Image 1 (tube, rainbow, N blue to C red):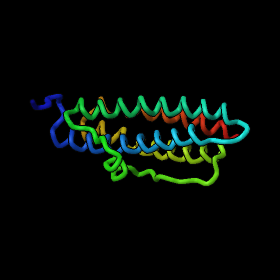
Image 2: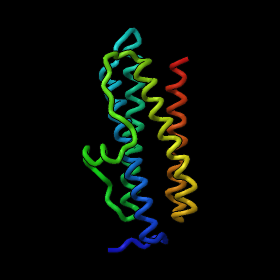
Image 3: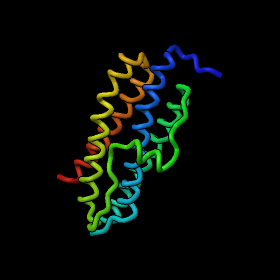
Image 4: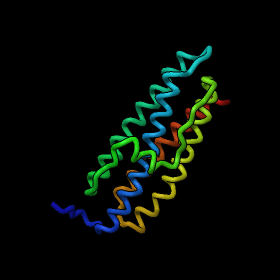
Length: 157
């Protein structure tokens, strides 16, 4: 059955591509946040262990929402690690230190990268692809990432 939601097939294809890239970035950030949760060490272990848990739980919800948005506009969400690694603009990393500040700095940089990408998507999706729904959805995600980045940044002061 065709998707008839008032957005051209070509525009829906562009939107789905942008959302797929976002999904890949979110999945990689989720994995890096899980890594911090599992492997953080130091005198602040328990506090940071719980903090990272709250952050990856939020990211898990974002991932599901993005995949469902891709489906709502009539496309299939990428769903393999291989696909995510091809689509993401973030980098995997291995670290020697397990200090919470190192984890937080790296995660903050990734959140800020996603925020900048989302900020660019808002106008493009609304104006160029005529998809105000996804533009609004992306605005909400950007605001959530801004809050998460604020929480991370606050731990570094």
